[in-house]
Every structure is written in C-alpha cells, then in structure tokens.
Image 1: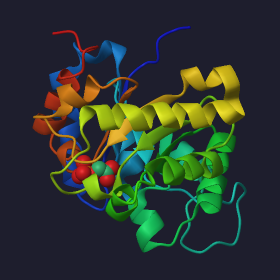
Image 2: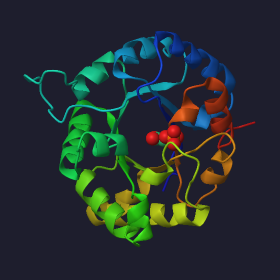
Image 3: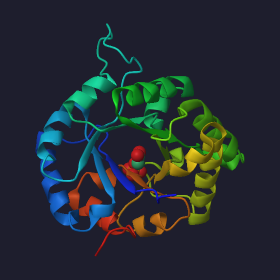
Length: 252
Ligand code: PGA
C-alpha cells in the first residue's frame, strides 16, 4: 500500500485579520523547497477563506475551513455556511467536530457525522476531531470515548482525515507521551477498520494539542502519526514553518 501523505494543518480559530494573510507568502517562502511531499493546510476564519485562497494561488498551500453546516443543500439557515459555499470560495478541507465546537456549541457525534457527510458531498475533505477530556483519561476511558466518537462521527469513506486532539492538551502546554499518542492512533485505526476494513490503512490520522516548534519532530516520530493539527503555533509563519520542517518527509 502507498504510504500515507503527511498533512500538517493550521487552525487559526477566531484569530487574525485580513493583514494576517501576509503570513501565507512568508510560510510558503520558508517551506516550498522542503514540503513537496507534505500537504500544508491553513484554515483561517470563514470571512478570509476567499482572500486566503487567492493569496495562496501560486503556492502549494491548501486552504480550509473550521466548520460547515450539516445541510448539504442550499437552505433557509440564517448564519450558516455550507460546505459547497466553502468549496466555491476556495477551501479544500474543513475541520468538523473540534472540541471547542463540541463543548461550546453542544455538538454531538451525530451532528459531526452530518457535517462530515456534507463536506464529502461537496468535495471537501473533512478533518474529524476526536479526543478525551482529562477526567475521562483519569478514569481510564480513553479507548471507550475515542472509539465511540470515531464510530459515530466518521463516515465510512477512505477520504476522511481524523485528528486525535485530547481536550486537555489543547491550548496549554501538556501533551500525552509519545507512546500514549501512538496507542490512541492505533485504536482509532482499529475502530476505522470496523467500517472501512482494509481501506482504513489509507486514512490519515493527525495529532493535535500543543504542537509547537519544540516538540513537533518528536510528535511526528510517534507510530501512526500522519501529521498534525496546530492551533496557536500556526498563526505565525516562523513557528508553523519550523513545525513543518521538523517532519521527516521535509527535505532539508
Ligand atoms: P493548540 O490548538 O495547538 O493551540 O493547542 C490545537 C487545536 O485546537 O487544534
């Protein structure tokens, strides 16, 4: 089977302004030579997707969104943005089920699944986020929680991407150990096998949660880690490029 192509994704969350798009050309200047074998993705806030896609048009950078409507067709849904609109604006990927949306907006697995289905229907690649809380880890429930999230949120489609993001590791400094990351990535793939059988081997599984220039190379060394979903450290080209250059597939 062909090796999975690494994906390193930046999630800008609700940060930045139009002027922040200047980071894209700086980022590309820093990684263009090294990143030929890596998919590099930036997910800016929705109003900037079209400008970001324009700014990235002569680079190899990919642009994505941070969320989409579960409704596949145009509909009377005030305030929502469909996957088809995001695709039309220049997005190629969309993050769904990020823990901030699960926690702050009450999004459950069924809704996340609908969003992932809508993304696929529109021709976008969904990055489906899963991960346990600190209390769930302390109670020894990681396999159960993450297993249910994967089985209930992920469509049976080999084009999907999964991001393992322990809730307690996001936005802080703590991360799981490398063996702990490898263990959860293996159990995610095992759960994907239930619906995808052999095709589960082609699904990319990213790690996310406090990835930065200092620990990226170590995270990438973990068995079964196909890349990263990066929050804070994706906002500045200097940090994000250092992360990308820390991947073993980056030619130096
Ligand atoms: P962080 O965020 O890298 O700032 O911890 C990761 C994420 O929420 O995707």
